[in-house]
Amino acid sequence: MTLKMSRVSRGAATMILAAATAGSALVVAPAAAAQDVPAPTDETTCKDAGTISVLAAFDQMASETKAGIPAQFASMFDTNVNNLRASLVSTSVAYVDVSRDASEINAEAEDNEDPYANFAVARLDKIRNGEADAVVAFQDLTLSEVVETLVLGMYTFTVPLDVVAAGMPSIGPTPLTPIAQGVPLVGSMLTSYTTIGFFAKLPFQYGSRGIKQLAVAWQNNLTARCWDGEAAPSDEERLSDGGARPVVPVQPQERANAEYMTLDDAETCVPASAETLGAALDRVAESMRGQVPADKQGAFDAEVARLQNNARTARITNNFIMKEPEDLNPVLAYIDDPMITFAWGAVQGAVDGTASGTTAVADLTVGNGVDYTYVADSLVGMIVSKIWGTVVPGVELPVGTGTMEFSVVPNFPAVASYFSGQALDTYDNILDTMCLVHPEDAETGE
Image 1 (cartoon, rainbow, N blue to C red):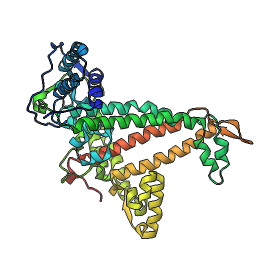
Image 2: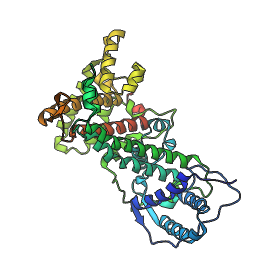
Image 3: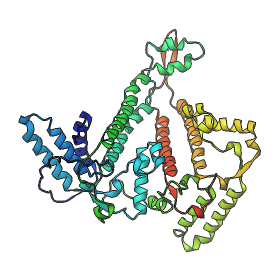
Image 4: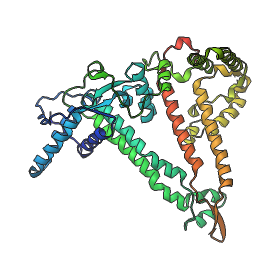
């Protein structure tokens, strides 16, 4: 069986594997002697990206790439490949710094398509399994682990582009602005799409999207093909305990989260987002109790009891409980605005009778809490933007026969909203992906 590789795989894969070596949290052992790349075998057994070791995949890519190298450059190519291979062989990384492909997590992770959440979920799973301080040889990682980690890096690279786009002020008018201004009814709205700032941010917006699409296409290309070579060792064989120096140190809150969240079989999984606020309050209070000084225990218990009582007695009408946009109207999923979804559900509930029932706050789920946080974040963003526009006035510039006000100071509230929105999305996806460790000990919402 003859395996062929696309130009994307041949060129990008070798370069990005090299970048991975330089960019990881490395614990470097003495350099190993360069080894010659083994020749392909006649009989090939297909392995997927989640099975093949990254070193075997590297060898295969190098062999296939060499076939297209002119003879006069073959020696130089072999030298570079052998040097890079020696670096891969002599490198170790902190296991918690390695991400995990969504297909190796669960169906929810695949639906979310969130590299940040995949990384966080993989870390929590490793921490829970006692692998927070584990080290793994780079050559023993699977190809899918390396590729997913690099995709995460490429997504992170787009953050500055997104920040610039979010904070771009309107700056001034373009020749299109007076034309848009003259359109009846919607002229004031259209002018925002014809400013200097609007066109200036387009390269950053589309640059960010392009990098993400390239990352996904590159990942699909490498993970969908057939690989030949040695499989990566099991965790029992490849992990060594102690000495890890992760790029992102393990935080106490991560350890606390790993105690109550796990990855479980899809048929038995109760998502962490389904835990009620009452059960979450009990859990958090119990975890904090050991940190409270002995002479403060009484006050702590009294405060917890007060919060628990308030959560049980405070009630909310059911039409104000957030629902999924697609459950209300498919159009809302395209609009993707939490405030509009919340208002729509409230009005629809008043019509269909949902408003006649109430639910205790303690019986709302953690997922409901995240939904309300989305609404609050959107509302706060609107208010702060209005205040920002008052505190930081723009400049009056001529447009057509009149003038218009344009902002020249970066829109910092929009940047803050970008970061809070990204954090909420990732947190929401983590809660939906992971399962409660002891679902029988916690009430779970509908």
